[in-house]
Image 1 (cartoon, rainbow, N blue to C red):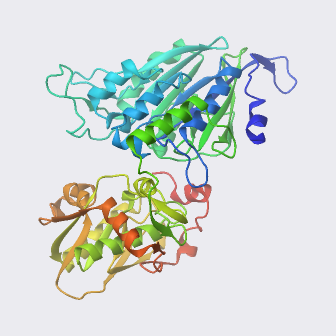
Image 2 (tube, rainbow, N blue to C red):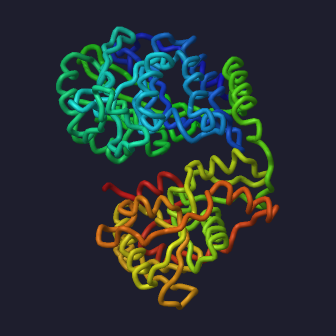
Image 3 (spheres, rainbow, N blue to C red):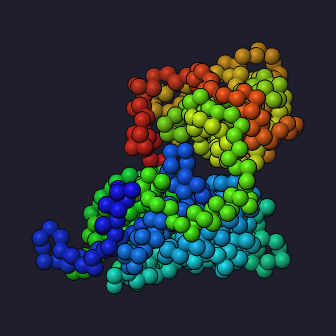
Length: 522
């Protein structure tokens, strides 16, 4: 608790100050930011995050510094708690109506996934802050929400441009054709944002891009457009770490799930009419650092009681934390492997595949609840099974790995019934070999049905569509049943992805900074 209040001694921002003992007067602006909260109402198993604790931080910040700028870089909704899921995010929207602290929010792809008609309604009735997006447009290519705003803080004119990552808008969330502005689309971010950079820059003292787009793309746009002083980023779930710059744009991102609040200190040179420097740091959020906001905490308790009274029903336990493929385990992870085993068992298949992004959070050591399984597997995937020649499947998997790894250093699949060897020469996975346990010419394959229905996201056009698949069971009920039956689940042996010469080709990846260095620029 003490740690947070020590931090907040610096919340009150002086309007002007001298730096380095000079006579130049600087205006100091504090900017607080969140991103990718994803409806995480409760703290995780380590006590990190939780919307009541985020609200507590923002409430104190706003009380102590009315001129602070508070921003959210999108994806406040979707896939973070059972009450939100079961209420189709009505719970999340109702809570957002009681968070009057943000000055602006970017439209993330998960804002759109609640359904465009609902989002438009909530923007009018629930959202306290304006939603911004230069790239989310109607059929006439006109922005659906305001593309930018100008705010005044400490006498400075602050221009903020919103940006939404370019993703397909699925039919299930699209507005009906009776909507005169439908269908809605998302423009290329660069095309969308550049005209507004040119329009706003002459009008403001500070220009901020509030961007829900890939972190690397945000870094690129900052490098390409020096007119931008600060990019507040979301979408990649990256914790950008402490930074300081006096020479160019700063790109900051505050991790995920409300586990941190980002804090940027901006110094504006009043004499030379420009930003002199920016410092960035992060405050940890959670039960070890703050008291929960009483009103928000009470509403969350009511939401669980109404929408998910079984959220904390225990199915069994994990002997150790079951990991997912992420920067700390980029090639193989125990929960992905365990789930591939369960796919193979339930489908009676020769081989099972789990795509890397299907599982989102680890199952922590200890009791496994309904909500813990939901957080690990938040998508409504089904297990499907089909038959294919072993040779064709081998080629498809090899082609995917070679095509994927020049871009990212995460292995794209978890396997059961297959072992993969990777050669990292020349910093790329150009040589890939697969060994199948079963030597049959035609084999049965179990995998998420999403990989069948969205084949082109994983494989090339000449390899799609996949053979007709039979749906077997939904993934979350499968996990619940397996944990109940096994009672105590354990990590399978980590021997399915064998990485050769990793020390020679790439540095050992142990931290976010090491991972960024290994990944390089796209």
